[in-house]
Image (tube, rainbow over all chains, first blue to last red; front, side):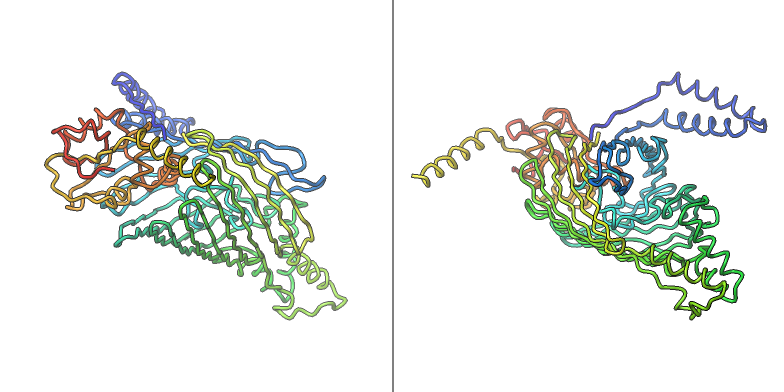
Length: 420
Length: 137
């Protein structure tokens, strides 16, 4: 990592303080919001006048296309597209002394029209040599690669298998506790979190919704011995997903219509089952990583329990094997993702068909749940070539067979990944 | 004949690498009395341990360039690319910060000579009385 040092001069610092005062005098005016932001920025800058700031960053520039004429898959279609998977991030970190440090990571993704957002923004405090507390916006360590999911340089694929890595959110605002210590010859990391995710546009099926995942709680335990890493994780949260806010014409709006329909019948309990209002969801993961001489073997198995929502439970796994040959690594991955619903019509013994108005609801619910279910096998073949000290070239081919929908999608991707 | 050529090739490559690769000395402050093994060095430079075996806080000092590459290979058994990937996992997740780089053997030596908490490495031929060698690789 090349690290740049920025140091504000005394003059700049004085200037910042002057701005600071002006801002306070503006508070209460209708430009209040603006001035609060200005004050916050000014105090951050004034603060940093005393401390060095380290800048670092990472980037992925990837292009991809699917093979078929009408294949749309993970944001790609038949036209070569350079924005969907591409991202740039810059991180500023400042050591404030006494074990405190402040870190901000801004990330811009092609898939969000390059709108920069705060991926991470936290204060960290080293309570002891082994124990660090993080306060603010951070990543929920759900999967083996969650922490550095966007830092493609840190692993062999362009991105970890997306059929497996598809939790609805990955960051949260709250508290993290990272305890890491050596135990004999092994290294143990215990990462616990508590917080909330309040993203305004979470991808839910074929739309985005203003969701909330509150009381997000859980952690991961990682054990590492030289070439072997074992990891387990468990998380839970209370989910609020306003299905009725989905735009007309989307699949989610049809689900909302079914919910409204059931609410008027004697089977109102089904409306409750469909709706996602303070429903507990849980996630469990187990992962393993072997990095022995020139071989890398990674595997993960995950279980996402959404049984109190209309969405199916997700069981997924993958195994990946890579072989390093000097600056080139070849790798192959195989896995499966299975989304399975508990069908509500048989669960509540709704008579079907009856020749009454109930049939439309029962039939519609069966159809929607059938559509949500997925059983996809996938394999990925890829190459990573470290042709430069800070940049790697990657190329990948992924084939996904969806048994339920009976389709077979081929995705080609090439890209450059970097840390700087 | 084929075996002979192979043997010759191996011998040449051994000679070649011996002449190119200099010995690296791992150095600490002369007042540091700890016995430091290669395993300790690896833990310190990977950020897995933050103190010397005797309990005093330890701050590793890295170097860039050829000697840095060689240290990564010999002490940590990793290529410089692998080390960069390793630290990017920690830097961008709030889990750790890589050791600072010294610009030269001279700077690394001067830093270590001036601070009992530092541990660094230099070309073994540059060692003098201002620092103590705990291991040669």
